[in-house]
Length: 212
Image (tube, rainbow, N blue to C red):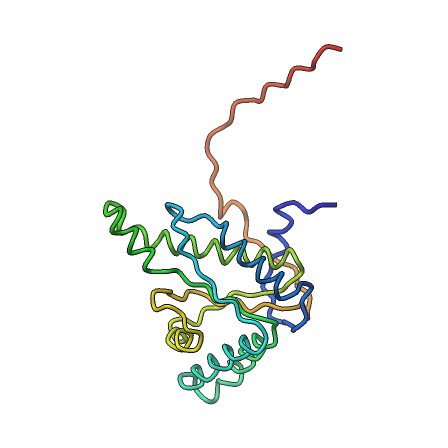
């Protein structure tokens, strides 16, 4: 039975126990991420989202570099848990780094000065949709992932190590890989605290049954 959209939304969960094995090839994962980001909506179809996709040793390198950056600022007596977290991310098959191109944002601000103050927010919202869409798409194919935020600590290192344009502003990192653990039951707060609904649709008119 084909899963519905809401089924895939429910499938997406934060996975910290990652492995190197994937149900898809590197090429298939790359194409999946590219297609998802390509089709995510953006204000004025600006297509401001960018992604750096790291596999294998390159992903390991990112988390090693991040660990060494954190080592300089995290107290030594508290670093063990930080190191374990970095190692758990490196245990995955790859990492997606999500950026928003600030040259695109500035171009929109110049072209549409009336909305200049809103475009940075629009860009962030588009980037968030790209992150969520990629995460859900990975989950659909049985790939675990989590969303991390080590910016701006790692920004300069990423730009130098992977020749990232300076106009690309880093927002999030998504380590991904095979599932090495299941999930606990997810709890939810009461709907009444999250939603308000007003108004009423007109009753639907039953469709006419054609005469035989």
